[in-house]
Length: 116
Image (cartoon, rainbow, N blue to C red; front, side, top):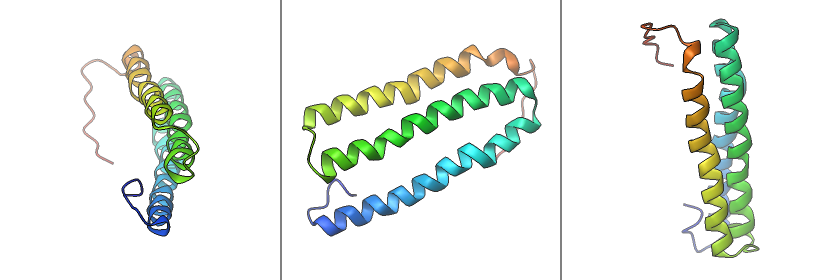
């Protein structure tokens, strides 16, 4: 919503609103879900720690890129698109490789049907 807003105050309102939501999500990843992973054992907690660190680092860059590209118009559109592409690759592709390489930490045939 912030990128399509023409009025500057509306643009920054939506940015602030989404940033507050992002802080709650990052806190949940860093603290709440980490405690659940620790209860499941050391190997799962270690895998979760790697994944959480990757996500926390990558997701912090999304609002930073927005601030300098759409917010202050300091970056060109080409740089913005390339920066988002690099972060998307890190946040999604590398995340998938880490989780697939760590699949042996989960016991075979043990499907946990827990929904948080």
